Image 1: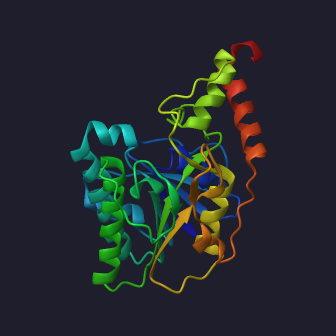
Image 2: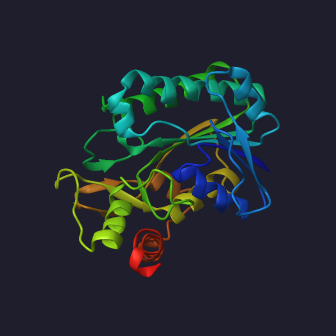
Image 3: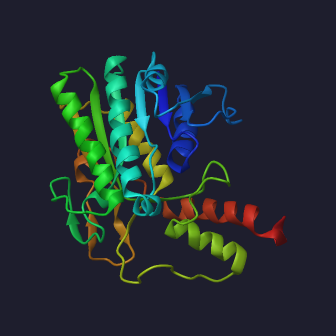
Length: 287
């Protein structure tokens, strides 16, 4: 299978591309800038994509079986420029969806976020929970979802659209320069390597649900290549409900688990690898 991953050199896209390449799929990492193929696997390629040029987006989707859209603006950048947030997370997502339909892509998977529900998640969260977040990050991601759902319905395409509302992932990135060190677990492991002390940044009462990067990758592989979905558009929460900073948050992934996927909840494994990565790259005393 030929798989296009936008944001392919980002935190999620980089790890996901490396993971899917082990199943002998031909992986195409799409980026706004020209980059060399990572020295991971012979079946990983790169594509340069210009989000302001629809023909460039069409070319990126040419002959692809699967498109995974992981590109987008993060929460802090969205807050600094809400207008740009809706352009990138909303309009550009719609352009990619339209191009995928035009090029007869069989499956389109959009990596959305748990934060569409609320800026401060609390209680039981399922796919039926009301979406209330007005923060530019959550609101713009939800706008991208709505555009994709509308496209798939109105154009009556044969493309399977999957929307994944992802909780907080953690784990080592595919490259040290990837912008992932503001994520709470990654940040703490980096602090431990550099300063040998931990400082929790942000409000102490914030509730977060976590999932390992390994479980994230296995769930995406399951949705794309293992399970069969009955609906043309499907929405899934993806997290690990057993872990949170404060225990009154349950981010339910039951809809996905009922299809047959089960998280390994391999927190110790992921943390160990992340700590080793940080010690190797940030702690000068071990180099």
